[in-house]
Structures are given as C-alpha cells and as structure tokens.
Amino acid sequence: MRLFLVCRLRRYFPSVYFFLYSYVLRRRFRLRYFQFQAQVRARLFGPEPNPIQVLTGPFHGMRYFNETVWDSITPKWVGSYEEELHPIITETMKRSYPTVIDLGCAEGYYAVGLALGMPDTRIWAFDVDIVSRRQCRRLAQLNGVSDRIVINGRCRPETLNSLHFSEAFVLCDIEGSEVDILNPLLCPVLLKTDLLVELHNADHVGMKMDQVLGILQDRFATTHDAQTISFTRRMPEKYRHLGVLPASDRDISVSVDEHRDPAQQWLLLRRRSS
Image (cartoon, rainbow, N blue to C red):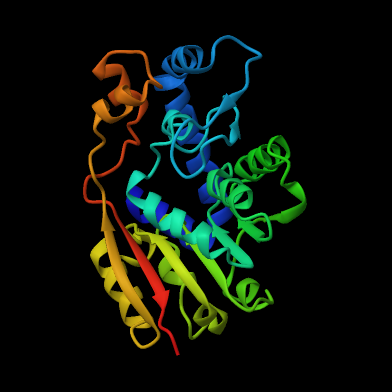
C-alpha cells in the first residue's frame, strides 16, 4: 500500500513527491555524513574561510561549497564523482556544444562545471527541487557563470520543444522520469541532441531499469548510436597517490563513496553523421 501511494504521488503530484524526497534524503545524509564531511573539508582545504575547489577530474578547479545536497558531496570535492563518465564529459567539453540542457541539475555540479569548461555555451538547467535550484544559483555565482545558466523548475516535453538551438548536449538524471520526457515523438527537438542519461527504475509506471534502457534504445535506434556505461568501484589508492586525501584507505573509500547500486548504468546516445 505504501509503495502504491508513493507511486501515485510521484505520477500525479511530482513537485510534492520530489520536495518530500529531497527533504528525507538531505536529512539522512546530514545525520549520517555531515560530521565526516566537515572532517574531510578540514583535511582537504583547511579551516574556514579557505575556499573549496574540485581537486581532480574534468572540473578541476571549480569552486564549491560545504552544504548538504541530494547525495554525498565529498566525491565532488575530490573530483571522483561519476568517474565512469569522465571521458564522455571531457569529450563533450572539447566539442563545445552551443547549448547544454541539464535535466535534474541538483546543486549544479554539471551545469556549472560545463559552463566553466565551455565558455561560449548556454546552459539550461532544470530541477523540480526548489532547494537544488537555489544551490545551483549560488554555485553559478561562486564561479562567475550566472550569466550563461538559465535555471528552471520541472521540465515537460513542451518545455524542451520551446527551446531554440542548432545542436545540444543533454544530461539527464531525473530519477525514472527519463522514460516520460526523452521521447522524440513528443520532443522532436531531441533529434538535434546527443544525450547522456542516468538510468533508473521507473516505479511510477512499473518499469525496471533494464526496461527503461530498452525503451530509450528503441526510441533513438534509427538516429543515434547507443553505448551503455556501467558503475565501477572506486579505488582508494588512486586518490591516495594523487595526494589529495591524507587519510587512511577507509577514510578515502568513504570520501569517494557515492552510495550507488552496483547495477547502476548510464546510456550515451550520439547522433549519427548524415
């Protein structure tokens, strides 16, 4: 019964669902990890008011803050966050798309990082969570890219269709709603984009991750080449050798732990050349 009610709430009142989900998740992370997060912050960057900067990875040097976010923030400080995607993000910045669309931007790690890496790119960032949108604005201001990031709430198919661009890169992390929005029949504009999608179970429509993957592959089969990327376990020694975490292997492991299901996958869809 509880799962039934949660699925109905998500399907018919998504703003309420994601507000409650965000509150519960942030509270859990704050209770479990905020003290450790403060210790990591002190080790890496020294006492307040020393600035926080991303230490490695494609967004090396990006300014950051010390707050509770949707997930663990310390992997973003270290630069190990979603390490599986680093080659794709690096290639994306080399291509310098005129437009990036970030669906589920959270506090702005990708929206702001890509704005820094592509100074001529316009970023459209969407998130249903009001706290995340406020954090994204602060992160953009902290890094001096507010003038190139447009931050909005919930994105619907008609919202995407209203955007005008010649080509774009779409980042999508919307907790199962990718099956609702990433449909070229509803959003023909998607045919002008490359997409990187974090896959989830779509419980509100009774679909598992592998079913969502199959549907998205079918929808873009005639226009895009598809590649799946799987979760890989973080190796503490990689970051110890970089010298960014003067701590034990256990502390390093916790610092780079994203608390992901080992079955996590992403789907990369690249447009085929004419």
